[in-house]
Amino acid sequence: MNEKEKKLIVFENKKIRRIWFSGEWYYSIIDIVAVLTDSPTSRQYWGKVKEREFKQLQLSPIWIQLK
Image (cartoon, rainbow, N blue to C red):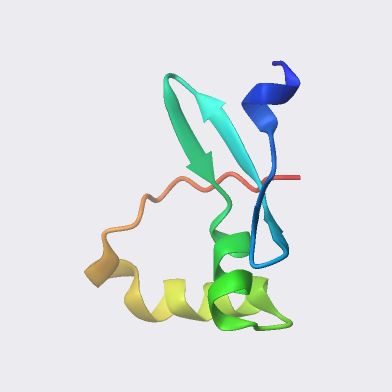
């Protein structure tokens, strides 16, 4: 995998991780939550949203944590 396929993007001076896989970009939801909410604990914030809204959001049961 080359650097272009893992390139960070910057939104409001915050970095968002992404990866190119099978012709599509996949973004780190934790990074997006951090940008949109200004939460210092974006991983915990997302965990609570997942617990509360899992069925309504139709989230994938398979999660891969980006490093």
